[in-house]
Length: 486
Image (tube, rainbow, N blue to C red; front, side, top):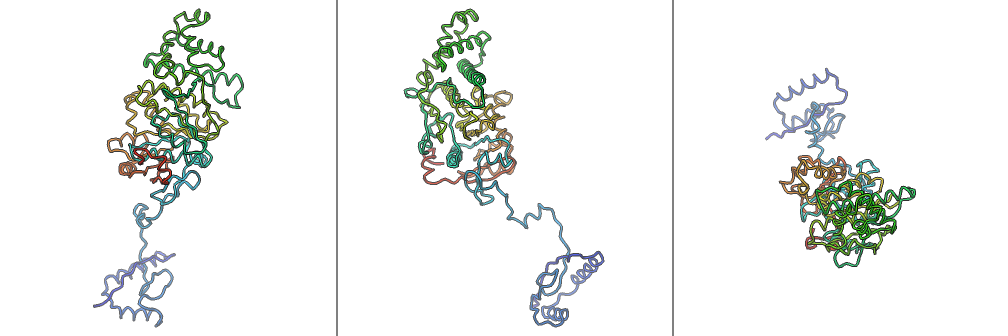
């Protein structure tokens, strides 16, 4: 049986049109000619090379040829980059670099995945430092948030948890040297005064500082009243009564408390009574009374027994003692605690800090908290903070209202404005909303539905990565939720 040799042609560089035509003619004639045996090919090769004995079965290498029994000149092949991608399957994303916190493994690039919101901003990868992490129960979203926060602390960042309704961040803070936990709730000894002034920025004059503190206090008081009677806005007289009561409370005590303000609402001074009437602030006063004698009694109704430690690597506001309380009580506690914390973390003179909003759907459903979060989203760069919002799914926003709801649109805006979005596995029926809200592609949606536990899709600016969060045994013992599982 004759042996035959097949060769692939390569067009020689610098070939003219006439040369190409002649080459193609020869190739066509070779294609139609009877195939030669190996012995005949060797004889032909010897004749072409002058009888050189060094040319074996595969000949010798010559310019513009492949290794083969004789010179061949195939025509060049043209194809789109989509088709040719199959010829170069090992090209990968260059990645975000090695600066920042180690999160885990980039499964598509097989390299380490590192992230830091301020580093990403400095490099121009993102336009804002806020982060959103979503994932159904048991997929690893909480583990991701805790990995990012604790490892960032080792690099000099700080962290604050505005409200920890499940107590999941308490062991994290206790495991970090210098970490502080503030536990508030019925029967707890800790008191937090939401009307504290907080740390003062060195950039503000005395008059500016007093105006900032007054605005913050007044905003909280209006929010507390609104939470107690949803859908019933304050009347002009009630606004005036609240302003006057706050002014009188500050005059009586430079650091007022809610009971002092309540006293001036229910028992106004002659000047206030002359302006709004003896009963002008009664309705507002009764709404606020719940914070000092209702189910929140003993939490936010006295001077603070703790102080925000700006040097602590992490501060956690533990509200887990309120588990089982009404939604109204939880909202009131979140508003008071977050206002107190905000006064401390929004100091431009402070360190770069990650502010965590766990169980974010609850805060987004609270008009006051939503407004405060929107403000911190806008001013995050000025404050030097990175907001980290953790929630289960986009459909949680349906608790706020339908697609025409202004509050829902505002909450959705927070998610879309976050330049870093981390998506853990979502159910199929949740993918449409997730895709629309977070700008996922069809291919990304397919991946998200099938992601294994502990693996998430990271969208950093306009770049995407599939990342497996790597945790140590010691971290797992501290971070673990859901019976210490991911």
